[in-house]
Image 1 (cartoon, rainbow, N blue to C red):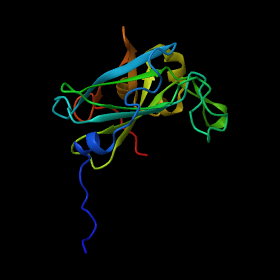
Image 2 (cartoon, helix red, strand yellow; image 1 turned 30 degrees about the horizontal axis):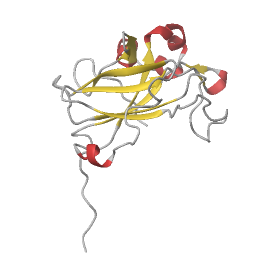
Image 3 (spheres, rainbow, N blue to C red; image 1 turned 90 degrees about the horizontal axis):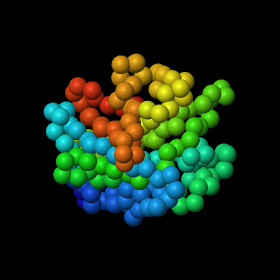
Image 4 (cartoon, helix red, strand yellow; image 1 turned 60 degrees about the horizontal axis):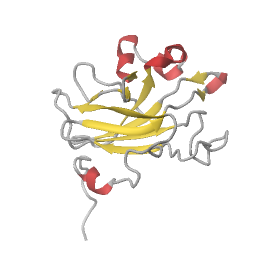
Length: 185
């Protein structure tokens, strides 16, 4: 009889075992208002991570999750799944087709700015890294967001995606200069 399997990094295994049928589509192609969240994943040396995966989970434009446990009722946007996975390409690129989320209720009657929850999987990691994507065109809501406000001001830019001709772009850096802020969850 063999013992437990030793801890392993998530490495290239994720391309085999973590396949997601809908892939990078949190919403159907051609959905009104659909935008691409996209960018690149870099390691601590600034090199692209070619065997990584970006996983997203988010609310719909009304701030509702596609989940029966959402106390406000499940998402009502037709074809919206709220979840997607994108494996990185040869140059570290990733992309997810989605709808921009709406604000969410926060504790004590506050509001959370529109954001996307992100898990990063890559070689050398024993566990996923968790971060968020906020949007540059929500500056007023971002300023009042309790989570973003708790991040050191000079590091907040690592969590903000910028509008471009395809949707919103944000790069993730696992270490080094401009390392993305990751949360301990």
